[in-house]
Amino acid sequence: MLFWYIYRLPLLETAIGIVLIGPIWGLMMGLLAKASPKAVRALNAVLALIALAGIVYITVLRPDGSKHEVILMPLQSFAEAKEQREMYRELLMNVLLFVPLGLTLPFALMPAGKAAPRFALFAALIALALSVAIEAVQYAFALGRCETDDVLSNVVGAAFGASACLIYCLLSKHRHE
Image (cartoon, rainbow, N blue to C red):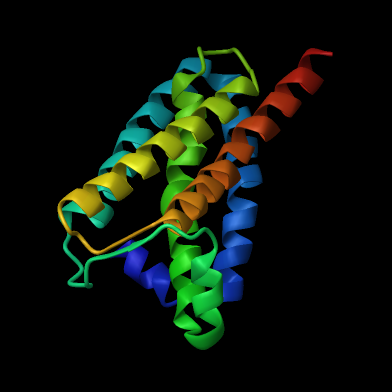
């Protein structure tokens, strides 16, 4: 339900929210880590599982009734968006879909009290593998449109989310100096 509410928001508001949520989450995790580093990991592990379940539900378990297509040309959606403006919204929603996983996964993987930027990169790589797997499942079971632009958008979303980890790491490093 929340995803569909967001889907109806103006594109500019949605894009600004996507860009700002990473730094805000990183600051919040920095504050929480002062009180309880283990709480940061536990909270994010639960939220990462919820994000993963949401991704699987939206992309695989909920049929959308669209026709079965395979589009392997990167950035084809941008070419289509020139004719069909709604494609911009679909691209942005594919970015948004993976932001929560990118926000939470690095913190769930990071040992309590440790700050390392490599967990942001690792989260982006997991998002890449997950997105490719989802597109393969969509292709194999004819679950709609299978395209490389979805993978690109998903990884961009995870990277925006993972920026929270980078902010957190910068704050942790600054605190220890």
